[in-house]
Length: 124
Length: 454
Image (cartoon, rainbow over all chains, first blue to last red; front, side, top):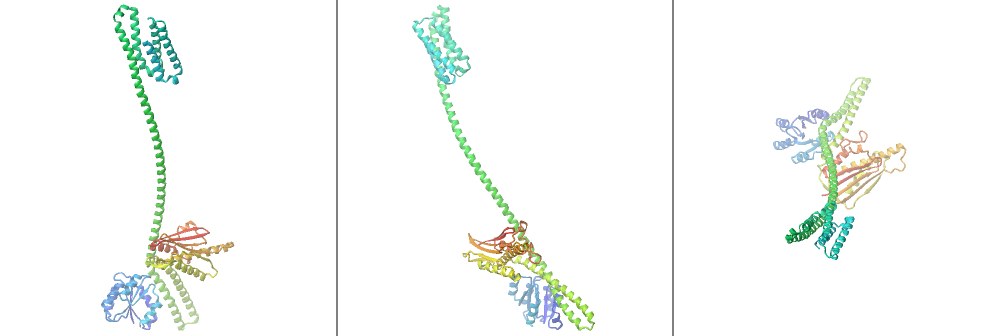
């Protein structure tokens, strides 16, 4: 399963790679990383219909996670990827907005990786 | 005859106008003698069959009277009247002298002298009459002035009374104003304090947001490092190096793993502080709902009590409830208000537990009974909630700081110092109420919540 992680923090990449080391080695998951909303859209345009799941932060400089979600739902109506939003603790505004715009799930920081792993395995 | 009239009335006039009977008793006696003399003279004159020379006795008598009246300082007020007699006396004397010295000349102008004498005589009375009139006017004026003085005195008194009354009013007003100024000052202080609190609350939430992301990385990486250590240990077991080397490597891995666990542990501690700080910004985000206040307070009181009991089996305290049954449901933010209750009760139980511990250490436990009380009351559109404990109380310097974020008297790790700061925020900002505290060091503490009900 190809998963695209969108976050402006570059350390997210090594964190995910270490957290999902076993799954990556066993080719259960395949992670790609984008460090901004724009980069994510660019990646999706280059790899059409490859990405199954998107994990996106909401508060990012430039394009926000909400805007990214809106654009994805508009530009990729065929084979729509699952979108899971991640944001800071207890931001109910963003939660409601994301759900309204068609997010499939919502996670709060700090990310509970055990929970995330279960959710990802369920989507498989 | 005319001499008698002039002298008699002159003396009478002097006595009545100067009130000599009372003011000049010595002169009065002399004047009375003068009157008797005058009466005696006129009687003698008629008894002696009106001799011509008798008029000389009159002259002497008159001159004496005039001289006395004219020269003595006591009679100066009636000098003008005395003067009016002078022409009459002078003409009489001149005519008598002429009669004696030049009888021929006198006989020729006899009529003229008589006319002049009569005229002077009449003049005397005219002047007296006029003087009398003047005197009456003067008297009347004096009476008027006296009356005016009385009136003005009365007016002055009433004015003084008014002034005193006004002064009292002004003093009262001044005191009222001073009190108002003091009230204003204390309100201003409260405002400054609550502004400070508000900005501190915002700052706290802001800082928490900024710290949260890096802190998440610390926690996540340390957690994953623990996992990596486990994996590494498994891998070491698979290799064929000597057991001695394996143990050495495993020892290092165990230390590494332990360090990572420590990082995770303290990271989690920091995380819970950050969460507490973030609740500041969430304080006013809730929605108001109709809530049974008494039930809410009771629920959180028990929650706090059993929370502490779970940690400290020894602990117990009397829970006293004094609920106003008429409160019913009130529009509040139940989760936020619940958090306030939880904080207040936790603190109250902590205070009584501390007091019990201190008394036990000092061996003076005696019959101390820890007690925490909640009372609710509703009147005049306001909800009053009191949380009272008979615990350690607080000194003034602690009391002054308890609503500041991060201020705590609990040992490190036991309190974040955010509970009361947040409670203050919830009550004052989210509910437009007031959170006050009263405390007696070593005896009791009372937290007072006042919330206006719309």
